[in-house]
Length: 124
Image 1 (cartoon, rainbow, N blue to C red):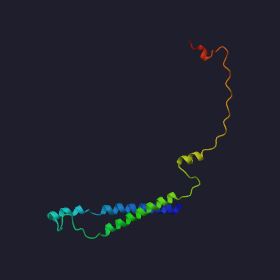
Image 2 (cartoon, rainbow, N blue to C red):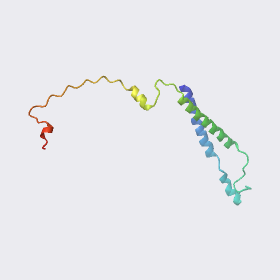
Image 3 (tube, rainbow, N blue to C red):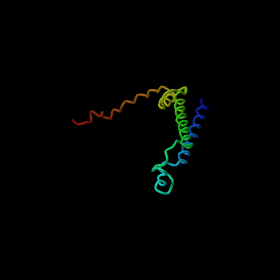
Image 4 (cartoon, rainbow, N blue to C red):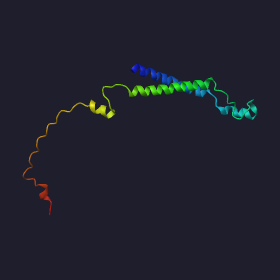
């Protein structure tokens, strides 16, 4: 199960890097807006809104792979079989060694006769 987990992590990281690269390489629709005001041959204000090009389609594929890898990681993580189940605190409590029974301390010695009791020394 560990090798599958590592493989899915690698797929997720590669797809994330691909998404970042593809998004940075694409130009926005606003890039053609300057061409609409005389410097280019664009016919509309925001450029032609034709079919998706190769970059946007590959960005969508990379995003789908990224989301699939994220769901797979979530599924793998929640369905792992561990010897100890529960939260972090449960693991800390179960890992603590059992303490030996404490030995009761010896009874304190009786106070000396010359020492007055605190209740008797309070003036009334």
